[in-house]
Figure 1: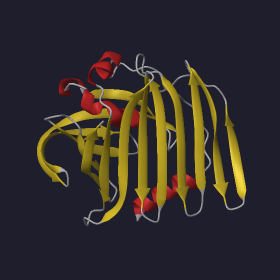
Figure 2: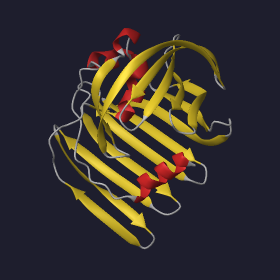
Figure 3: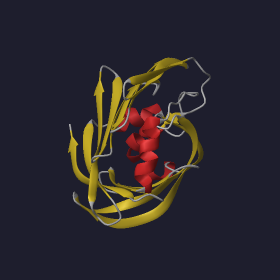
Figure 4: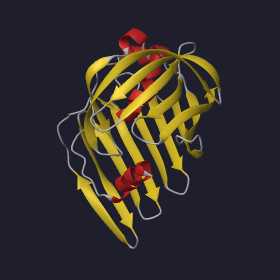
Length: 242
């Protein structure tokens, strides 16, 4: 229930964006260019009692030199979120972010467009018959990478390159630039609906949220994500290379 309160809060509070993204030293564009694979994931969301409470779908594909990352989350009868990001394959420069979050009481949308280190766009918040539009102005670059990109690219890195102490991460859903520490916790054998896997156990920690991400050792891909402090985990149901 505490998780649901936090998610609903995100969808009803108007926010202003005060940061954007630039290239990062955490991952080199050549790594993406060499290892990128168009693919799609399907995860079940489960609570601590093992009950299915929603689904998470993550898809990556390449078209006309642009990487598209699509993140669709559905928490049954609570919240639906669709986040789509486009990035230049050669430079990893962010091109656009489109977000829609809808609950029973409100709907929040964004459309950010990047031009080098500057961006523009706005948040639109609809509640009942009223709509609040918040225009955004160009700001200095604060973040190195988006939170969505961390999830999309972490399996592409050599495992010895995963750890970092202070990665500036922009979260479009919370509109914050977060300091993220990524640590390798060891190895663990896990079972999920998609099968049994030997995995690398990786912690992604920020001041507001910590995820434990399990990346399979063979054919590296995310197979489970635990959300610490919340009644939620995501388990891989299906993976498809395209």
